[in-house]
Length: 500
Image 1 (tube, helix red, strand yellow):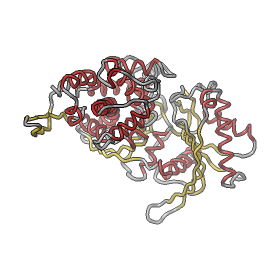
Image 2 (cartoon, helix red, strand yellow; image 1 turned 90 degrees about the vertical axis):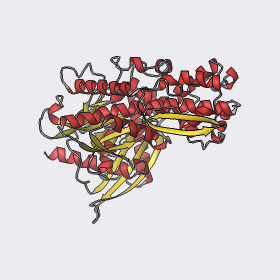
Image 3 (cartoon, one colour; image 1 turned 180 degrees about the vertical axis):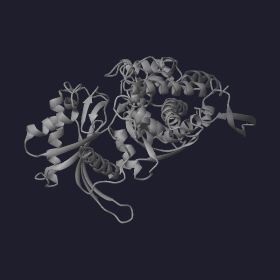
Image 4 (cartoon, helix red, strand yellow; image 1 turned 120 degrees about the horizontal axis):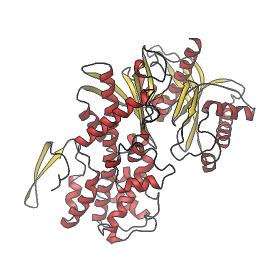
């Protein structure tokens, strides 16, 4: 039975004739996972075996609720002084006390470090009669070499300072001392808006001598070592905070920011009275959940499959970021590759033989998952991708590969949805609101580029938050406008903090 292993709460029924046979398909919405049309094309005995293997990725509604409850429990533990250290979800204060009402007018420099690319931006913020602000931005992208990512902190930040110097030369502004906002997308314990201690690297970074040190201080030291320009580093924010601030300009109800890309994380506006790590009872502060580490205390053990364990064991940070490894783009392609090898070993795919390339770790890129699920149905895109991996797939091979991609990406969307539902339900409870109206700002390559992730994710979030009215908006950071606002707002926040 196609619906086997899925909680029996079906809300849509489709009936049609195929080859003279009446076919009835019950869809569970939103937790039905496999594409029925594609599954129908897989032949009888193989279909049953393929279905058995891929059904492990299905999450029942009750399982998603359990993930949500455990996330909420760890969030509570992360906020409390006595349990903060043991919590897997660190709930880090950002010292962003409120969403801003506008941006400071002037020129700013913005830095964005969150992955293998590093971006430098010149931001010009002016006034606009209609919206109160206007933004112009120029930016340059720099690739971070492997030796800088995995060498020493001095090497990494010297390279960043070198990139800044190059950017200033290109735009003939080296003589100016501009305020600088730094988007730094790694776990940081803030001591102020311009002072944060790096807790641990993620996303493949391993630069020694950075963990346990003030990131802004490392940047300032690198700039000082060069000596050919000056910068006033006024603020450092996480990319989730940056996303929330960016989207706030589109919708004043935006109090949650989320990234689903190379990594996966979320922030939100928490009641100050519950943020025990910071003094004060009034108002709200943005909290960086760092939920990617959820699972470190065993909360995800029964949900992790053999493929997840292999991905974790062969990663740069075994035992860490377990929730993120179920969701993010850094690991999704590798998970699919391992599933394909399982199907090959069971002689359900490629006649039981995998190419050397498919046997190579990291060869199945996450972008392939998006491209395969975007295939129009003629299988050409799937065939071309598999050909680049040294395979000569049959039509059935193409269909099975698509099902494997859908299984992994759908579980990712559902797991991510359970996490966000935990955040939003918590916000409603703490605010004692019968119905919470909230907007979530989202950025990241998986969210933006995968053809189905958004719909699957949104459905699960709404299913698990029945007393919330949720709007999702996509950050415009990719176009540069959002990143510009992040820098200007961060600088204004710092200026306000310094004058208080």
